[in-house]
Length: 117
Length: 222
Image 1 (tube, rainbow over the protein chains, first blue to last red):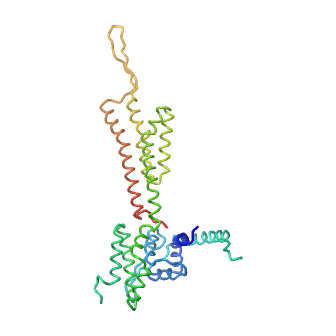
Image 2 (image 1 turned 180 degrees about the vertical axis):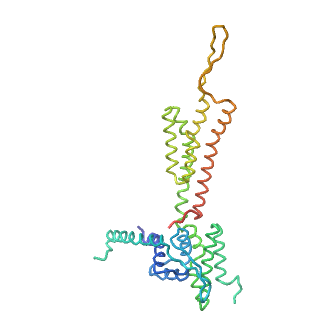
Image 3 (image 1 turned 60 degrees about the vertical axis):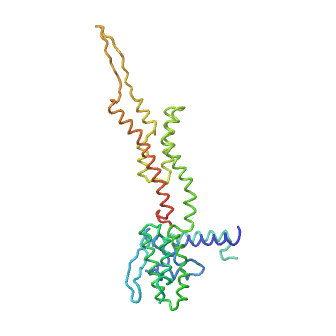
């Protein structure tokens, strides 16, 4: 595999694949409003995503019934749209945690990145 | 304050509005509302125009947001790539259903007819282009494709024989079954036209569905 472009594309695909569940994970501690949620994800180290692209994703998660939203007035500023996990979203997150662990371990085994050198 | 047409936030929103024109209205409204709210919050927190600009940069180009709403950057690749094959496949399915039984019945008789129709049905049921209801309609409307009307046309088993009675009067005696002509012709027309109509509807729907999928209308992909 060529370094550079292909390497970037692989990383992009990995990020894209994991992003929906990372969004669900951020909501695991409780509800967040859009601006706040987007900030938390874009600050996550190594994530390197355009903040704006999280909104279409949130909208998709909502249409799939994994998150639900409520508008609420804020004390200082515009009304905020709060996102929170639905029971289905919670289940999807738990499922992905299991899947991710076994997938990560398998990849680690193959790549020799498991930590034991 | 800068005039509205030079305000970077307004410019950003206008670009997003322009880039999302092709999205379904409810998806678009949702997205515009979210980004608008985000920008209001950004504006409220920004203490300088430089900070505002860097916040807009972090948000990314409006066109990228629109692309993501359409199904992500890779969405343009896979549905387009699959279009030709699935469209060719749809046409094959329809042709197999319409003509398969007829064509195979010529060399292979009833067995060929069954084989031809079964092939068509197999293609139909394994296709992702149609809903279960459409598949069922297709399966029921053209059992045997064009073979059915042809078969119905020759269904008449009526055999008439002229019988001479002992008195020397000949009478015609008929046995068997035939549809009366006033019923037979309309039935034949309907039975011949139905497969064509259903074929046309099926192909139209498959095309419409694929087009919708490419616009990111299809069921959300995670």
